[in-house]
Image (cartoon, rainbow, N blue to C red; front, side, top):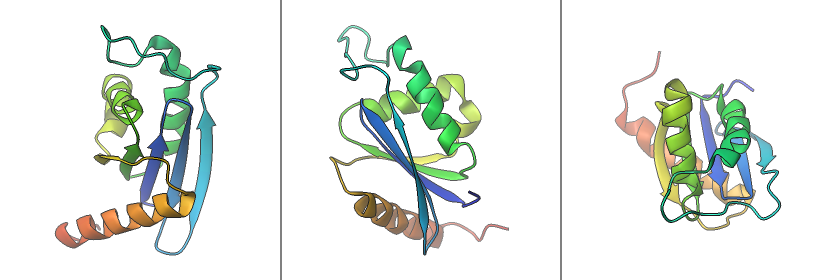
Length: 128
């Protein structure tokens, strides 16, 4: 899919990645292979090495996006952002915002992202 914007809702069990435009969207779901999701270590707040395959799958799903919004509850979105900065800095630069979002429906995720990017696009010079 060749759409400019993407949104990724992520928790420690799954990520839902949406590539969208004003009229349509496509969804990809990436799930962790860990049976109970993430185990947080208070001494090491960054994601564990066992999250790497999960994060790599999400990064692959976002690879074509030019602007990305990260959403989710808790720390998963922040951990994924840190993974991108360390492992895929070019993709990390395309993350325009990281916001909290509990467990919205697909329609709520895409609607929120459309409103977010519409507001940003009004403040940004035209892309050429």
